[in-house]
Amino acid sequence: MGTNDLSDIPDPQLRAECEDYASRRAIDGTSETKEELHRITEENTAGVKNFRWEKQDELKIFRPGRILNAREFLRLLNRIVPARFWGISKYGLIGLQIYKPNESGDWHFVCGVQGTMTEYSQMYFDAHNLPTSEKYRGWRTVLLRLITGGFISEEAAHRVFGEPVGSEQSRRYREQLYAYRNR
Image (tube, rainbow, N blue to C red; front, side, top):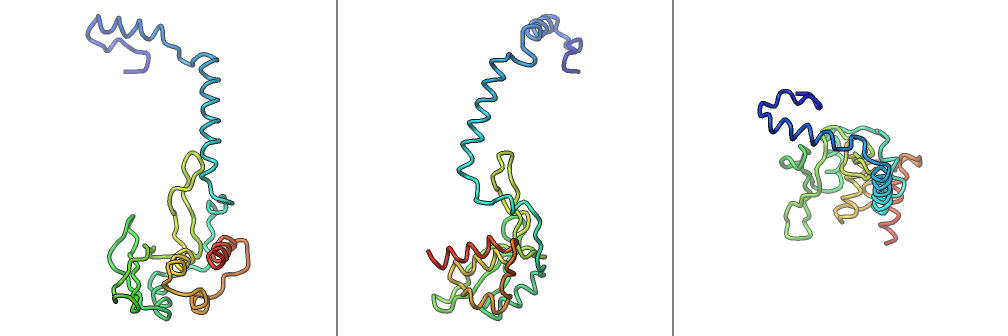
């Protein structure tokens, strides 16, 4: 049945009521309705601006940097702290655990990692231009999580994985480390 074809409705009374309704409804809306919709849309757009990240547009860009296989990442990380992959975390990522001998000797889940890791993360964004989730989780993002979680030091991470290149690609990573150092 097409959008305006009511001939397929078998009940004549129902068909007559549908035709009456279709003749009275506004297809495109009035100019007042359009203006109200535009006003509400602008308010909604202005309301979500507070939830956007600073310079978030760079997270829409694919910035692969140095690509590491998850096994290579784990091999390098084990030069700093005992680490292992354990199970599958959310969205099919491999669960990364760190052993902290100073505490009760337990393995601690840190985050999920992908099988092939770009150096820097790339995000998905919704219709309001708000970041929703990671498209690619970068290994520098994982290092940042390990550093801010107290699992490894910044110095050890950079000694084993290398200093971030002083480019626009690494700006966000370097700024987050600076903010963590000077919190």
